[in-house]
Length: 462
Image 1 (cartoon, helix red, strand yellow):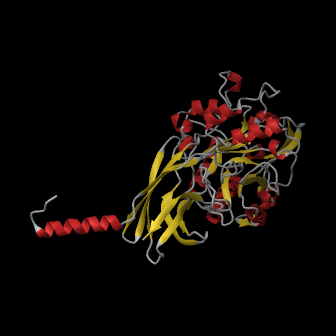
Image 2 (spheres, rainbow, N blue to C red):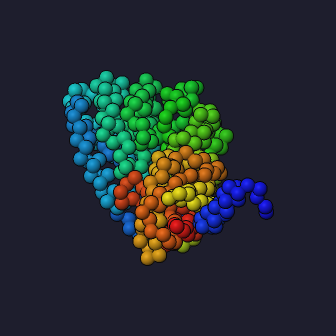
Image 3 (cartoon, helix red, strand yellow):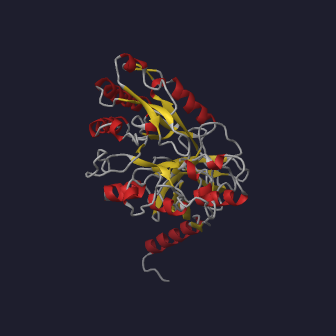
Protein backbone atom coordinates (compact mmCIF):
# COMPACT_ATOMS: atom_id res chain seq x y z
CA UNK A 1 0.00 0.00 0.00
CA UNK A 2 1.34 3.42 -0.95
CA UNK A 3 0.57 6.49 1.16
CA UNK A 4 0.52 9.84 -0.62
CA UNK A 5 1.12 11.85 2.54
CA UNK A 6 3.95 11.12 4.98
CA UNK A 7 1.92 11.93 8.13
CA UNK A 8 -0.76 9.41 7.10
CA UNK A 9 1.86 6.73 6.58
CA UNK A 10 3.36 7.47 10.00
CA UNK A 11 -0.04 7.35 11.67
CA UNK A 12 -0.88 4.04 9.98
CA UNK A 13 2.41 2.52 11.02
CA UNK A 14 1.86 3.68 14.60
CA UNK A 15 -1.63 2.14 14.60
CA UNK A 16 -0.30 -1.20 13.34
CA UNK A 17 2.39 -1.24 16.01
CA UNK A 18 -0.19 -0.40 18.71
CA UNK A 19 -2.56 -3.14 17.55
CA UNK A 20 0.17 -5.73 17.41
CA UNK A 21 1.14 -4.93 21.00
CA UNK A 22 -2.40 -4.92 22.40
CA UNK A 23 -3.83 -8.07 23.95
CA UNK A 24 -6.42 -9.79 21.79
CA UNK A 25 -10.07 -9.94 22.69
CA UNK A 26 -10.93 -13.16 24.53
CA UNK A 27 -14.27 -14.84 23.76
CA UNK A 28 -15.33 -18.09 25.39
CA UNK A 29 -18.42 -20.27 25.46
CA UNK A 30 -19.15 -21.96 28.79
CA UNK A 31 -20.62 -25.43 29.18
CA UNK A 32 -23.89 -26.05 31.00
CA UNK A 33 -24.28 -28.29 34.04
CA UNK A 34 -27.23 -28.31 36.48
CA UNK A 35 -26.90 -25.88 39.37
CA UNK A 36 -26.87 -27.19 42.98
CA UNK A 37 -30.33 -27.76 44.45
CA UNK A 38 -29.37 -25.96 47.67
CA UNK A 39 -28.87 -22.63 45.92
CA UNK A 40 -30.04 -19.72 48.12
CA UNK A 41 -33.72 -18.83 48.49
CA UNK A 42 -35.12 -21.87 46.66
CA UNK A 43 -35.83 -25.58 47.06
CA UNK A 44 -37.21 -27.63 49.95
CA UNK A 45 -37.36 -26.04 53.39
CA UNK A 46 -37.40 -28.12 56.61
CA UNK A 47 -38.48 -26.97 60.04
CA UNK A 48 -35.70 -25.10 61.84
CA UNK A 49 -32.92 -27.20 63.29
CA UNK A 50 -29.58 -28.75 62.46
CA UNK A 51 -30.07 -31.22 59.62
CA UNK A 52 -26.54 -31.76 58.40
CA UNK A 53 -26.29 -34.65 55.98
CA UNK A 54 -29.99 -34.65 55.18
CA UNK A 55 -31.65 -33.38 51.99
CA UNK A 56 -29.80 -30.29 50.65
CA UNK A 57 -31.41 -26.99 51.63
CA UNK A 58 -30.61 -23.29 52.04
CA UNK A 59 -33.51 -22.14 54.26
CA UNK A 60 -35.33 -23.20 57.42
CA UNK A 61 -38.93 -22.56 58.50
CA UNK A 62 -40.59 -21.90 61.82
CA UNK A 63 -43.89 -20.72 63.30
CA UNK A 64 -43.86 -18.12 66.09
CA UNK A 65 -46.77 -17.30 68.39
CA UNK A 66 -47.78 -13.64 68.47
CA UNK A 67 -47.74 -13.79 72.29
CA UNK A 68 -44.03 -14.60 72.17
CA UNK A 69 -43.37 -11.24 70.55
CA UNK A 70 -46.12 -8.92 71.82
CA UNK A 71 -45.95 -8.34 75.57
CA UNK A 72 -48.28 -5.38 75.90
CA UNK A 73 -49.83 -2.60 73.87
CA UNK A 74 -47.04 -1.45 71.52
CA UNK A 75 -44.59 -3.39 73.69
CA UNK A 76 -42.44 -6.00 71.95
CA UNK A 77 -39.86 -8.60 72.89
CA UNK A 78 -38.04 -9.84 69.77
CA UNK A 79 -35.96 -12.46 71.60
CA UNK A 80 -37.81 -15.49 70.20
CA UNK A 81 -37.43 -14.24 66.63
CA UNK A 82 -33.82 -13.18 67.15
CA UNK A 83 -32.94 -16.60 68.55
CA UNK A 84 -34.52 -18.27 65.51
CA UNK A 85 -32.86 -16.01 62.95
CA UNK A 86 -29.45 -16.27 64.59
CA UNK A 87 -29.60 -20.05 64.88
CA UNK A 88 -30.49 -20.48 61.21
CA UNK A 89 -27.93 -17.87 60.12
CA UNK A 90 -25.22 -19.69 62.08
CA UNK A 91 -25.88 -22.67 59.81
CA UNK A 92 -25.59 -20.41 56.75
CA UNK A 93 -29.34 -20.47 56.11
CA UNK A 94 -32.00 -17.82 55.64
CA UNK A 95 -35.23 -18.16 57.62
CA UNK A 96 -38.82 -18.32 56.45
CA UNK A 97 -41.24 -17.64 59.30
CA UNK A 98 -44.89 -17.06 60.09
CA UNK A 99 -46.41 -15.40 63.14
CA UNK A 100 -49.71 -16.99 64.20
CA UNK A 101 -52.58 -16.09 66.51
CA UNK A 102 -54.30 -19.48 66.57
CA UNK A 103 -52.93 -22.98 66.14
CA UNK A 104 -54.62 -26.37 66.70
CA UNK A 105 -53.46 -27.87 69.97
CA UNK A 106 -51.82 -24.67 71.25
CA UNK A 107 -53.02 -22.20 73.87
CA UNK A 108 -51.57 -19.00 75.34
CA UNK A 109 -50.68 -17.74 71.86
CA UNK A 110 -52.84 -14.58 72.10
CA UNK A 111 -51.10 -11.65 73.86
CA UNK A 112 -52.13 -11.58 77.53
CA UNK A 113 -53.05 -7.90 77.56
CA UNK A 114 -55.74 -8.52 74.93
CA UNK A 115 -57.23 -11.40 76.94
CA UNK A 116 -57.19 -9.23 80.07
CA UNK A 117 -58.96 -6.45 78.14
CA UNK A 118 -61.86 -8.79 77.39
CA UNK A 119 -61.08 -10.15 73.94
CA UNK A 120 -63.64 -12.82 73.13
CA UNK A 121 -62.09 -16.22 72.42
CA UNK A 122 -63.98 -19.04 70.70
CA UNK A 123 -62.88 -22.50 71.87
CA UNK A 124 -63.88 -25.54 69.83
CA UNK A 125 -62.64 -28.73 68.19
CA UNK A 126 -60.90 -28.10 64.86
CA UNK A 127 -61.76 -31.00 62.53
CA UNK A 128 -59.63 -29.73 59.63
CA UNK A 129 -56.39 -31.26 60.88
CA UNK A 130 -55.94 -34.19 58.49
CA UNK A 131 -53.97 -36.43 58.50
CA UNK A 132 -53.91 -35.83 62.26
CA UNK A 133 -56.85 -36.19 64.70
CA UNK A 134 -59.24 -33.25 65.40
CA UNK A 135 -57.64 -30.87 67.90
CA UNK A 136 -58.82 -28.08 70.22
CA UNK A 137 -58.22 -24.54 69.02
CA UNK A 138 -58.78 -20.98 70.24
CA UNK A 139 -59.99 -18.43 67.67
CA UNK A 140 -60.13 -14.76 68.71
CA UNK A 141 -62.83 -12.30 67.74
CA UNK A 142 -61.09 -10.64 64.79
CA UNK A 143 -63.52 -7.70 64.87
CA UNK A 144 -62.25 -6.62 68.28
CA UNK A 145 -60.88 -3.08 67.92
CA UNK A 146 -57.96 -3.64 70.31
CA UNK A 147 -56.91 -6.79 68.44
CA UNK A 148 -57.09 -4.99 65.09
CA UNK A 149 -54.94 -2.18 66.43
CA UNK A 150 -52.49 -4.74 67.82
CA UNK A 151 -52.14 -6.49 64.46
CA UNK A 152 -51.55 -3.30 62.46
CA UNK A 153 -49.07 -1.88 64.97
CA UNK A 154 -47.24 -5.20 65.22
CA UNK A 155 -46.75 -5.42 61.45
CA UNK A 156 -45.49 -1.84 61.38
CA UNK A 157 -42.95 -2.56 64.11
CA UNK A 158 -41.92 -5.86 62.53
CA UNK A 159 -41.19 -4.13 59.23
CA UNK A 160 -39.32 -1.27 60.88
CA UNK A 161 -36.99 -3.74 62.58
CA UNK A 162 -36.66 -6.52 60.01
CA UNK A 163 -37.41 -5.34 56.47
CA UNK A 164 -34.35 -6.19 54.39
CA UNK A 165 -32.68 -8.23 57.14
CA UNK A 166 -30.34 -10.63 55.30
CA UNK A 167 -31.15 -13.41 57.78
CA UNK A 168 -34.70 -13.54 56.41
CA UNK A 169 -35.62 -15.20 53.13
CA UNK A 170 -39.40 -14.76 53.05
CA UNK A 171 -42.25 -14.03 55.45
CA UNK A 172 -45.67 -15.59 55.11
CA UNK A 173 -48.24 -13.05 56.26
CA UNK A 174 -49.85 -15.21 58.95
CA UNK A 175 -51.71 -13.57 61.88
CA UNK A 176 -55.18 -14.56 60.62
CA UNK A 177 -56.80 -17.99 60.82
CA UNK A 178 -55.71 -21.48 61.86
CA UNK A 179 -51.91 -21.84 61.61
CA UNK A 180 -51.93 -18.23 60.37
CA UNK A 181 -53.16 -19.70 57.09
CA UNK A 182 -55.99 -17.22 56.47
CA UNK A 183 -58.91 -19.60 57.00
CA UNK A 184 -60.84 -21.12 59.90
CA UNK A 185 -62.43 -23.93 57.94
CA UNK A 186 -64.87 -25.42 58.75
CA UNK A 187 -65.77 -22.51 61.07
CA UNK A 188 -65.74 -19.93 58.27
CA UNK A 189 -68.05 -17.76 60.37
CA UNK A 190 -65.18 -17.06 62.77
CA UNK A 191 -62.63 -15.90 60.19
CA UNK A 192 -61.54 -12.27 59.85
CA UNK A 193 -63.74 -9.97 57.78
CA UNK A 194 -62.61 -8.47 54.50
CA UNK A 195 -62.11 -5.17 56.34
CA UNK A 196 -59.71 -6.76 58.82
CA UNK A 197 -57.87 -8.50 55.98
CA UNK A 198 -57.49 -5.14 54.23
CA UNK A 199 -56.04 -3.58 57.38
CA UNK A 200 -53.43 -6.32 57.72
CA UNK A 201 -52.48 -6.17 54.03
CA UNK A 202 -52.15 -2.38 54.09
CA UNK A 203 -49.89 -2.61 57.12
CA UNK A 204 -47.64 -5.20 55.44
CA UNK A 205 -47.42 -3.21 52.19
CA UNK A 206 -46.44 -0.06 54.07
CA UNK A 207 -43.94 -1.80 56.35
CA UNK A 208 -42.06 -4.07 53.91
CA UNK A 209 -40.35 -2.74 50.79
CA UNK A 210 -37.52 -5.30 50.47
CA UNK A 211 -38.40 -8.57 52.19
CA UNK A 212 -41.21 -10.33 50.25
CA UNK A 213 -44.47 -11.06 52.07
CA UNK A 214 -46.54 -14.01 50.85
CA UNK A 215 -50.32 -14.48 51.18
CA UNK A 216 -52.13 -17.81 51.29
CA UNK A 217 -54.90 -17.31 48.73
CA UNK A 218 -54.96 -15.48 45.38
CA UNK A 219 -58.12 -13.38 45.10
CA UNK A 220 -59.66 -10.93 42.69
CA UNK A 221 -62.52 -8.46 43.00
CA UNK A 222 -65.26 -11.11 42.84
CA UNK A 223 -64.21 -13.22 45.84
CA UNK A 224 -66.95 -13.25 48.46
CA UNK A 225 -64.72 -14.30 51.35
CA UNK A 226 -61.37 -12.66 50.78
CA UNK A 227 -60.37 -9.06 50.17
CA UNK A 228 -58.82 -8.68 46.69
CA UNK A 229 -55.04 -8.99 46.59
CA UNK A 230 -54.12 -9.73 42.95
CA UNK A 231 -52.92 -6.17 42.40
CA UNK A 232 -51.07 -5.85 45.70
CA UNK A 233 -47.34 -6.23 46.31
CA UNK A 234 -47.43 -9.74 47.71
CA UNK A 235 -46.44 -13.21 46.60
CA UNK A 236 -48.42 -16.35 47.43
CA UNK A 237 -47.87 -19.59 49.30
CA UNK A 238 -49.74 -22.78 48.42
CA UNK A 239 -49.85 -24.83 51.63
CA UNK A 240 -51.56 -27.83 50.04
CA UNK A 241 -48.99 -28.16 47.28
CA UNK A 242 -49.31 -31.19 44.98
CA UNK A 243 -52.56 -32.11 46.73
CA UNK A 244 -54.83 -29.17 46.02
CA UNK A 245 -52.77 -27.20 43.52
CA UNK A 246 -53.88 -27.92 39.95
CA UNK A 247 -57.25 -26.79 38.58
CA UNK A 248 -59.49 -29.89 38.32
CA UNK A 249 -62.57 -28.06 37.06
CA UNK A 250 -64.66 -29.50 39.90
CA UNK A 251 -66.90 -27.06 41.74
CA UNK A 252 -66.06 -28.49 45.16
CA UNK A 253 -62.33 -28.03 44.42
CA UNK A 254 -62.56 -24.40 43.35
CA UNK A 255 -60.37 -23.49 46.35
CA UNK A 256 -57.40 -25.29 44.78
CA UNK A 257 -54.49 -22.91 44.24
CA UNK A 258 -54.38 -22.68 40.44
CA UNK A 259 -58.19 -22.55 40.34
CA UNK A 260 -58.11 -19.47 42.56
CA UNK A 261 -55.30 -17.98 40.46
CA UNK A 262 -57.41 -18.36 37.33
CA UNK A 263 -60.47 -16.78 38.93
CA UNK A 264 -58.39 -13.93 40.37
CA UNK A 265 -57.25 -12.98 36.86
CA UNK A 266 -54.12 -12.11 34.93
CA UNK A 267 -52.51 -10.03 37.71
CA UNK A 268 -52.61 -13.03 40.01
CA UNK A 269 -51.62 -15.54 37.32
CA UNK A 270 -48.54 -13.48 36.45
CA UNK A 271 -47.72 -12.59 40.05
CA UNK A 272 -44.63 -14.84 40.05
CA UNK A 273 -42.86 -12.54 37.60
CA UNK A 274 -42.31 -9.96 40.36
CA UNK A 275 -43.31 -11.66 43.61
CA UNK A 276 -42.29 -15.12 44.84
CA UNK A 277 -44.45 -18.22 45.11
CA UNK A 278 -43.77 -20.61 47.97
CA UNK A 279 -45.78 -22.96 50.14
CA UNK A 280 -45.79 -26.39 51.72
CA UNK A 281 -46.11 -29.87 50.30
CA UNK A 282 -49.31 -31.24 51.79
CA UNK A 283 -48.52 -33.56 54.75
CA UNK A 284 -50.42 -36.45 53.14
CA UNK A 285 -48.02 -36.18 50.20
CA UNK A 286 -44.75 -35.83 52.13
CA UNK A 287 -42.12 -38.02 50.54
CA UNK A 288 -44.64 -39.94 48.46
CA UNK A 289 -45.01 -37.07 45.99
CA UNK A 290 -41.57 -37.91 44.58
CA UNK A 291 -42.34 -41.58 43.93
CA UNK A 292 -42.70 -42.73 40.34
CA UNK A 293 -46.32 -43.75 40.99
CA UNK A 294 -47.56 -42.15 44.25
CA UNK A 295 -49.85 -44.54 46.12
CA UNK A 296 -52.47 -41.90 46.98
CA UNK A 297 -54.52 -40.88 43.91
CA UNK A 298 -55.14 -37.43 45.45
CA UNK A 299 -51.46 -36.57 45.00
CA UNK A 300 -50.99 -34.37 41.94
CA UNK A 301 -48.06 -34.45 39.54
CA UNK A 302 -45.25 -32.55 41.25
CA UNK A 303 -43.51 -31.39 38.06
CA UNK A 304 -46.77 -30.06 36.63
CA UNK A 305 -47.54 -28.24 39.87
CA UNK A 306 -44.09 -26.63 39.76
CA UNK A 307 -44.49 -25.56 36.14
CA UNK A 308 -47.95 -24.06 36.59
CA UNK A 309 -47.21 -22.17 39.81
CA UNK A 310 -43.58 -21.14 39.16
CA UNK A 311 -42.90 -22.01 42.79
CA UNK A 312 -39.48 -21.21 44.27
CA UNK A 313 -39.60 -22.91 47.67
CA UNK A 314 -41.71 -25.41 49.59
CA UNK A 315 -41.82 -26.41 53.24
CA UNK A 316 -41.43 -30.15 53.57
CA UNK A 317 -40.78 -32.84 56.14
CA UNK A 318 -40.93 -35.93 53.93
CA UNK A 319 -37.42 -35.68 52.51
CA UNK A 320 -35.89 -34.74 55.85
CA UNK A 321 -36.65 -38.09 57.44
CA UNK A 322 -34.64 -41.29 57.39
CA UNK A 323 -35.69 -44.15 55.20
CA UNK A 324 -36.27 -42.52 51.81
CA UNK A 325 -35.43 -44.99 49.04
CA UNK A 326 -32.61 -44.29 46.62
CA UNK A 327 -35.13 -43.86 43.80
CA UNK A 328 -37.18 -41.38 45.83
CA UNK A 329 -34.03 -39.42 46.71
CA UNK A 330 -32.90 -39.32 43.09
CA UNK A 331 -36.29 -38.23 41.78
CA UNK A 332 -36.63 -35.60 44.51
CA UNK A 333 -33.24 -34.08 43.73
CA UNK A 334 -34.06 -33.94 40.03
CA UNK A 335 -37.48 -32.33 40.49
CA UNK A 336 -36.55 -29.95 43.29
CA UNK A 337 -33.67 -28.70 41.14
CA UNK A 338 -36.25 -27.41 38.67
CA UNK A 339 -37.93 -25.15 41.20
CA UNK A 340 -37.25 -21.42 41.14
CA UNK A 341 -34.41 -19.76 39.26
CA UNK A 342 -31.39 -21.28 37.53
CA UNK A 343 -28.77 -19.11 35.88
CA UNK A 344 -26.19 -20.22 33.35
CA UNK A 345 -23.44 -18.17 31.73
CA UNK A 346 -23.52 -18.80 28.00
CA UNK A 347 -20.49 -16.75 26.90
CA UNK A 348 -17.98 -14.27 28.23
CA UNK A 349 -16.09 -11.74 26.12
CA UNK A 350 -13.14 -9.80 27.56
CA UNK A 351 -11.80 -6.84 25.62
CA UNK A 352 -8.64 -4.90 26.51
CA UNK A 353 -8.87 -1.19 27.30
CA UNK A 354 -6.36 1.27 28.75
CA UNK A 355 -5.61 0.01 32.28
CA UNK A 356 -8.77 -2.08 32.29
CA UNK A 357 -10.58 -5.16 31.05
CA UNK A 358 -14.07 -4.73 29.60
CA UNK A 359 -16.18 -7.78 30.43
CA UNK A 360 -19.39 -8.79 28.63
CA UNK A 361 -21.16 -11.73 30.26
CA UNK A 362 -24.13 -13.35 28.53
CA UNK A 363 -26.39 -14.76 31.25
CA UNK A 364 -29.58 -16.81 30.81
CA UNK A 365 -32.26 -17.86 33.28
CA UNK A 366 -32.93 -21.54 32.59
CA UNK A 367 -35.27 -21.94 35.58
CA UNK A 368 -39.01 -21.37 36.00
CA UNK A 369 -38.95 -18.23 38.17
CA UNK A 370 -36.84 -15.10 38.59
CA UNK A 371 -34.59 -14.15 41.49
CA UNK A 372 -36.36 -11.74 43.84
CA UNK A 373 -33.55 -9.90 45.62
CA UNK A 374 -31.03 -7.36 44.39
CA UNK A 375 -27.87 -9.35 44.92
CA UNK A 376 -25.03 -7.99 42.79
CA UNK A 377 -22.25 -9.88 41.06
CA UNK A 378 -18.53 -9.73 41.77
CA UNK A 379 -15.56 -10.40 39.48
CA UNK A 380 -12.06 -11.39 40.54
CA UNK A 381 -8.63 -11.92 39.01
CA UNK A 382 -6.72 -14.93 40.37
CA UNK A 383 -3.02 -15.52 39.65
CA UNK A 384 -1.34 -18.81 38.83
CA UNK A 385 -0.79 -19.50 42.53
CA UNK A 386 -4.52 -19.31 43.18
CA UNK A 387 -4.28 -15.98 44.97
CA UNK A 388 -6.91 -13.33 44.32
CA UNK A 389 -5.23 -10.09 43.29
CA UNK A 390 -8.17 -7.96 42.20
CA UNK A 391 -11.93 -7.80 42.84
CA UNK A 392 -14.68 -5.77 41.22
CA UNK A 393 -18.12 -5.20 42.76
CA UNK A 394 -20.48 -5.16 39.79
CA UNK A 395 -23.56 -2.98 39.48
CA UNK A 396 -25.36 -5.87 37.78
CA UNK A 397 -27.95 -7.83 39.72
CA UNK A 398 -29.78 -11.13 39.21
CA UNK A 399 -33.10 -9.60 40.19
CA UNK A 400 -35.97 -9.82 37.73
CA UNK A 401 -34.43 -11.86 34.88
CA UNK A 402 -37.38 -13.95 33.69
CA UNK A 403 -37.15 -17.61 32.67
CA UNK A 404 -36.04 -18.18 29.10
CA UNK A 405 -34.60 -14.69 28.77
CA UNK A 406 -31.00 -13.52 28.59
CA UNK A 407 -29.08 -10.42 29.51
CA UNK A 408 -25.58 -9.14 28.79
CA UNK A 409 -23.83 -7.79 31.85
CA UNK A 410 -21.19 -5.20 31.00
CA UNK A 411 -18.45 -4.48 33.51
CA UNK A 412 -15.11 -2.69 33.54
CA UNK A 413 -12.37 -4.19 35.69
CA UNK A 414 -9.62 -1.70 36.58
CA UNK A 415 -6.14 -3.22 36.18
CA UNK A 416 -4.10 -0.26 37.42
CA UNK A 417 -1.40 -1.51 39.80
CA UNK A 418 -2.00 -5.08 38.62
CA UNK A 419 1.23 -6.83 37.66
CA UNK A 420 1.44 -7.88 34.00
CA UNK A 421 0.71 -11.51 33.38
CA UNK A 422 -1.98 -14.10 32.87
CA UNK A 423 -4.90 -14.43 35.28
CA UNK A 424 -8.05 -16.47 35.72
CA UNK A 425 -11.18 -14.33 35.59
CA UNK A 426 -13.87 -15.51 38.00
CA UNK A 427 -17.39 -14.40 38.90
CA UNK A 428 -19.83 -14.99 41.75
CA UNK A 429 -23.00 -13.55 43.26
CA UNK A 430 -22.46 -13.39 47.03
CA UNK A 431 -25.24 -14.10 49.49
CA UNK A 432 -26.48 -11.11 51.50
CA UNK A 433 -26.05 -13.31 54.56
CA UNK A 434 -22.31 -13.07 55.32
CA UNK A 435 -21.79 -16.82 55.78
CA UNK A 436 -24.54 -17.87 53.35
CA UNK A 437 -23.77 -19.86 50.22
CA UNK A 438 -23.44 -17.67 47.10
CA UNK A 439 -25.68 -18.18 44.09
CA UNK A 440 -24.04 -20.89 42.03
CA UNK A 441 -24.35 -21.01 38.27
CA UNK A 442 -25.44 -23.87 36.04
CA UNK A 443 -22.02 -24.31 34.47
CA UNK A 444 -19.39 -27.05 34.55
CA UNK A 445 -16.78 -24.50 35.62
CA UNK A 446 -18.72 -23.56 38.78
CA UNK A 447 -16.50 -24.31 41.83
CA UNK A 448 -13.89 -25.79 39.50
CA UNK A 449 -11.01 -23.67 40.76
CA UNK A 450 -12.44 -21.99 43.86
CA UNK A 451 -15.51 -22.81 45.92
CA UNK A 452 -18.37 -20.41 45.30
CA UNK A 453 -16.82 -18.93 42.15
CA UNK A 454 -17.45 -19.56 38.46
CA UNK A 455 -14.27 -19.66 36.39
CA UNK A 456 -14.92 -17.67 33.23
CA UNK A 457 -11.74 -17.51 31.15
CA UNK A 458 -8.04 -16.78 31.19
CA UNK A 459 -7.09 -13.13 30.56
CA UNK A 460 -3.84 -11.29 30.10
CA UNK A 461 -2.88 -7.99 31.68
CA UNK A 462 -0.18 -6.12 29.78
